[in-house]
Amino acid sequence: MYFKSTFFEEYQLDEKRVTLGRTITETDFVVHAGHTGDFFPHHMDEEWCKTQPFGQRIAHGTMVFAIGIGLTASEINPEAFSKGYDRMRFVKPVHIGDTIHSEITISEKGDAKRPEMGTVTEHVEIINQRGEVVMVCDHLLLVKRKN
Image (cartoon, rainbow, N blue to C red; front, side):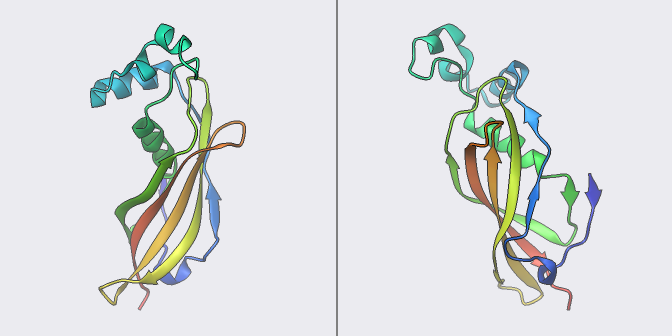
């Protein structure tokens, strides 16, 4: 993790970065369930899941989001502030043993209410080891201008 100042003018549309991967473990399931209180059988009951069409436990969507976005935090930009996330979709299930990584593409730039700032949208795709997109969202940033 490191700091890298990037101002609004330096963001380029379609610029892309790719993170390292992270394998999802049973410990991730248990810890996330404990943090959130979400002990639904879809996540925690291996035997019940064997009787369901998906056949195995499914990762909490919020856990996939948290880990996938956490992977993007290898670069800290002190000139930008996160405004939140839009258009989040869980596209495919993630299971214990899957390895995910994130791909971030600059998809939009625009003006902000404050003239010394601009808005940047990073389109985030979280992808499994088979190259399948499992989650998508847009990360909204408020970024300082150079001038």
